Length: 293
Ligand code: OGA
Ligand code: MN
Image (cartoon, protein in one colour):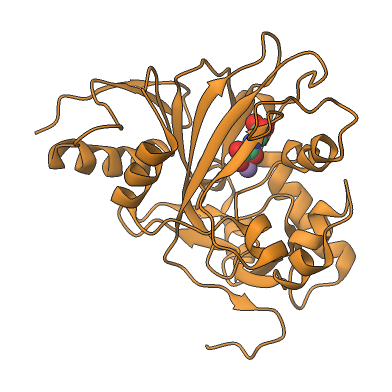
């Protein structure tokens, strides 16, 4: 049995979870309750966690296989498991607004699902906040499950059989050039546009900034549909913006959620967060390879 406290954060999704530490020995009941809560709420925030990288990686592995961080992997071939979110370097120095990495990170201000551009996209992201800006720096979330639930029957039928190409170079080159090795490591990949949660059967669509086109559709029709689906999911009343407190650990379900950074003044404030991800179970198809079915 679990004694977790679960308080919903928004009508569509999200919960604040208390009564458990992600950083020590985790009772089986707590882990099972967290897995259930991921399937049910899609976004979980655990305040006041006494986190370190080592503890975060250990917790990440309780949920599944840690995903190799794609920037380092693509550029150097080295497997690492952490991404730093924010503007603080490993040596503690701060990058300001003019720094190239700050600009590159603005790609995260487009609505997206982490790793949707990978052959095997991620299941969840886990983000721990160490330092937060005094102003700004919230992360906004919206549910493509809730949005799917609001579609009329005709549109559901239209999108049911479709694939969607997700392409990192397409999305990221809108804000900054992508390193050639990194780009070569991430060929466009096709996923099903409609996905289903295997635990509860709930469906969602799967779009975001990396979604480039619909195979078999013209460019213009693809864009119209993908933009419309994104817009429906991200109406203001469907957004929960998480204002981070130092010590928050959040977990979100990339299979069905969109998120985006809302920005902050990097020249003025420090923001340091560490992210790990758990690999998903559903495999897409590298674009151009023969379809398996
Ligand atoms: C992320 C992300 C945006 C932000 O951590 O995956 O997209 O800066 N973050 O809040
Ligand atoms: Mn992200």
